Length: 181
Ligand SMILES: [Zn+2]
Image (cartoon, rainbow, N blue to C red):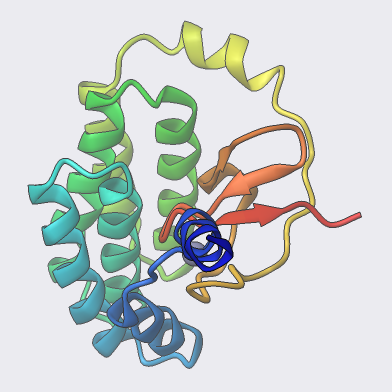
């Protein structure tokens, strides 16, 4: 009886984090961007095929890793696929925040044409920006751990889903992450 309960509790609370995701995050953190990109591309393709909620972020991270590896041309399709999924899923605030960050990262590396391309392209696929403006005004400041305790992904407050006031869901593996005080 008690054993059955424990097994159920474990099922409810522990989440299976795929080793390949932990490997990808570790490679990214170590600066092995080419390796990280290959892994994220594989994970993203799987999530995309399933219509998974984490597909956009995984594509974006694959693209970011390619850019950091100096393989910009290989990264742009992943970045655009991630942004397209955000637009399709009406995640407008995240779409604009992500577009800004990608453009800044590209500009910081001197990739002005690529940055302009991404900005023009998001303008084409995005719905009207008015909704985004009302949403951004209610965005509050959260303090998260720097990395997901389960999969090791670097966490950004605008890349997680908030489950309640103090708990977010890791965008990469879906584990709950508690806000720090
Ligand atoms: Zn995670």
